[in-house]
Amino acid sequence: MSAIKKIRSIRLTNTLTGKKEVLETYRPGQLTFYSCGPTVYGFIHIGNLRGGLVADQFYRYFQRVGYDVQFVRNYTDVDDKIINKGREEGISPEEVAKKYTQEVEKDFAVACMLEPTHKTTVTTHIAEIIALIKKIIEHGNAYVAKDGEVLFSISSFKNYGQLSHKKLDDLIAGIRVEVTEKKQNPLDFTLWKPAKPGEPFWDSPWGKGRPGWHIECSAMASKWLGDQIDVHHGGEDLVFPHHENEIAQSEAASGHGPFVKYWLHHAFLTLSKEKMSKSLGNVFTARDFLTQFSGEFARYLLLSVHYRSQIDFGPEAVEQTLTGLQRIYEAKARAQQLLKQSRARADLRAEAAWGVFAASCEKARTEIDENFANDFNNPGALAALFTVIREFNRTLAEPLAQATPSAILGAQELIRLMEEDIGGILGIGRSEPEKALADLSRIRVISRPQVANAVARPTEDEIRQAIEDRAAARKAKDFAKADQIRKDIESRGVIIKDSPSGTTWEYR
Image (cartoon, rainbow, N blue to C red; front, top):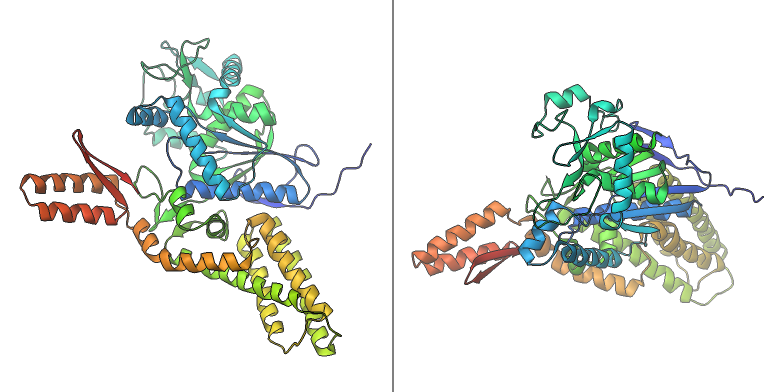
């Protein structure tokens, strides 16, 4: 019988308890990890990209410390938004989901995200979803309405509210959910919804229909990871009701708890201090961001801040990213140049200085790992790297005609810190300096107008008002005013298209 390998201890801030806890998996040496992926009805925005990159870092580090990780990332490929998008584009919901899943995959690839163990979709797990709903009904935690809708009974699950730390009575008192005769409790949520004309459906014991939103993740997680999993990740906006409902239906179906031992939630990405969302119209798509900047730039900007801290996307964040990456690659270029110098007999003074620096690299390696293990403290890990870069620059400033053995060792250790200790987890610092610095120079030139344009993007209400004002100006034959309105709105990242059937718009 082979011995279980020793795994580095990690501490995680668990949303369930509100405390930082030592990670202890259900099965020694193995870790099950589920991350909520996007609903595929359009291009994802950079807030969605942050979620993907946070999960990617978790996955990389769990593997780094020695876990055998089973990582599932899902795609919601049937949803009201997907159905509506299909109507807009004149294609089927299935075609919408396939089209935008492929586009998301392209963005994730450009951002250098690792492939998860399993990429799952709702429509390929209908059988598992129906089987899970059957169990919930059998255990007395759900009921079937006359029209075939299956609803989860909140009152049957005593621990409801444990993740979001909400009390059932307070939720009911402040209810904004539409109350219907078929609901036993206004907070009861849908597990299976009856089919509507023209919408996708599947046969079930309760009639033709499709899954409710929350049940899909429970079914996919249990299918691939089991009834009880180690780590579940998602955005903080999913804590309630999505993840709260996942717990209720999963534990009701299996009879075991907790469904998840450690819940990890990342904070919002904001744009001018407002949450970025498609409904608000203040989105900067990941495609635009990755095209105009780069995958490595995205990784630094979105991962240099602690995952539970909010990021406000704007000129300051861009400038900090440019400065950070430039410092890394300028030091890497100097280190590579040092390695090209021929070895010589060691100058004792230089040997001593570089010997101290090599020891500093080893100390930094320990600090970087300690920060990652402490609830993924990325700012702390980067601070340790920049401390050793400053020491490298000071040591390099000492006169050195030719590289000594210790200087070469120091340069090698610095590059290793960048490429492996930081780069292997954050995915930065691994490119060739010449190309990376050229890209940063390009970005510095173009970044200010592009960021200003993204921040200034108008809301959908503002766009509709502009289109109405432009139409009124054209009707009054004030074409100069109409042209100016069009130029103003296009300067803020919106394309206006006129056709015989009317005027349409889209974000650039």
